[in-house]
Amino acid sequence: MGVWTTLARMATVTVFGALAAGTALALAAGAALAQDTVTIGYTGPLSGGAALYGKNTLSGLEIAAKDINAAGGFTVAGKTYKVNVVALDDKYSPSESAVNAKRLKAQYGAPIVFVPHSGGAFALQAFNEQDNFIVAAYTSVPNITERGNTLTLRIPPSFLGYIDPFVRVEMATFGKKLAIANADHDYAKAWTKAFVPVWEKAGGTVVADNPLSYNKDTDFYSGVSRVLAASPDVMLVGGASEPTALLIRQARELGFQGGFAIMDQAKLDEMARIVEGFTLLEGSVGVMPLVHDRRPGAEAFVAKYRKLFNKDPGSEVSYNYTALNAVTEAMTLAGTVSDPKAIRAKLNDAYAALPSERNPARITGVDANGGSNAKIIVGFVEKGVIVPIDAATGQ
Image (cartoon, rainbow, N blue to C red):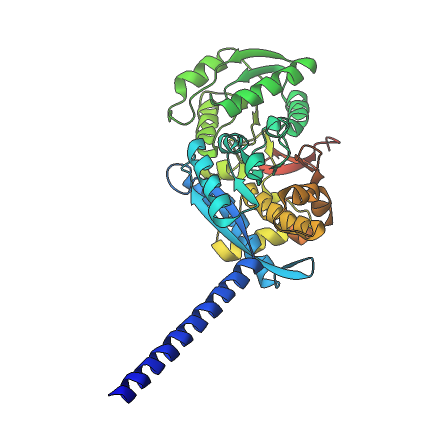
């Protein structure tokens, strides 16, 4: 009996020793995996009315991560890392964005958190410097990088770069009388505040100002009628693509033959699908759709996206794809994956170093405040096709 007890105890020790060794190996493997992987945080709308937009911005990050990992990862200080994107749903709520960002930093150690709406970005700026992570904001609102926050990246160029070419082409083509019929949210108000002085400085006048509730209304008859009563030559419009397209259709049905200056929130290609082509959009100027951009990098990215998802990508996909490539390049240049200040300091050099296939958004660099710069090409609908216009030269 003593012998069997002794053997049993020896077996138990052996089993527990093996288990302990196995656990140690698993912990070591887990530590190695964590050490070799960089978590990129994302908080955005993945449910609710803005879910499609949120998923589009997220897909840009996921495709970038897939490409980086498929290429063997990226090297920092002699060590190779893979990218892991962790996405949390904030339902387009800034308060939820803040909660998610806290979790992404505390639980996952994310050195950067992507957020695709200005409300969320402003919410994160309240504590990101203290918590030590970069806010990667997909918003063209210029003051997101004018608040002195040293750990912010504005992913798209400021919308201010669109205003001069919009004013030039519309005023030269249609005339000097402007009617404002854009959305009534804060982003549209910021556009109006910036657009009107440029229009007036160029010799134009504002003959009507009647913002509309794009997110609630589906019938724009009365609002558009009031605007057209002032006989404008050009209408400043814009919100989400679908209601913007419906408003333009209503204006055409009421006899408006002038031009439309369309805020960058609405996309020409998305609106064309809603109103069945570019006929009703004739004379419109807006952001050049990615699928019509013939510059190197853009065409290849569009082909890749179509193959993966069997649909066209929007500009938000390419901007986020480029941004994640720039972030990993900045980590390489900074020699760290965990120091947000050092990574932020190298973002300008990182964007400049990206080859065209990793930079379909054509970002040229980042200014001292964290705002991205690009050679802006706008699209003007003429004779049913989109004509590219260089924002700097007007040609």
